[in-house]
Length: 190
Image 1 (cartoon, rainbow, N blue to C red):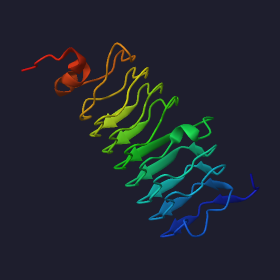
Image 2 (cartoon, rainbow, N blue to C red; image 1 turned 30 degrees about the vertical axis):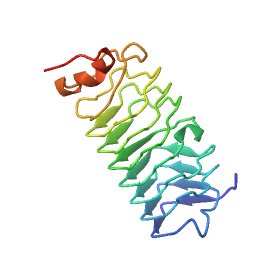
Image 3 (tube, one colour; image 1 turned 135 degrees about the horizontal axis):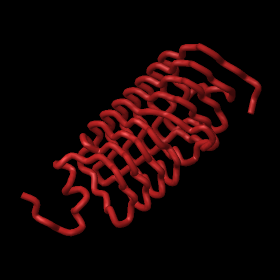
């Protein structure tokens, strides 16, 4: 990786599909309304960075470091977060479009997903201990061998989670969410 260190910079309205973001370490930077769609962000380091109203759909994140990254109102369709550098991996998502993205096998405890569209997201083998899915749509999201201990699903919508193939000890679920835990039994809950 380049020895390029960029701190406290704001990038606004930049189209990185035309001019690629240089390799380097980006610390406490803001990316506002930037287009990273299908960009190669491999090997970059983002520490304490905020991405707001950015398009990161299908961006390549191979060995990308995301530490305390914040994504707000971003389009991240088809993004494979499992390709990220897993050392100190931490982020939060607020009102993001994450359809068809993957967190397969990641250990991302205490992650906040606030008002996100997470349809068909893959959480297979992920550790989501203590994470919060606040008002997020989990329609057809894949939970298989997923650790959901102490996870807050009380306001999450449209999830189906099999308690026999996932670890859900002390997960928080509203009465409205119970059908999503019992769907395989084909019960008529009235």
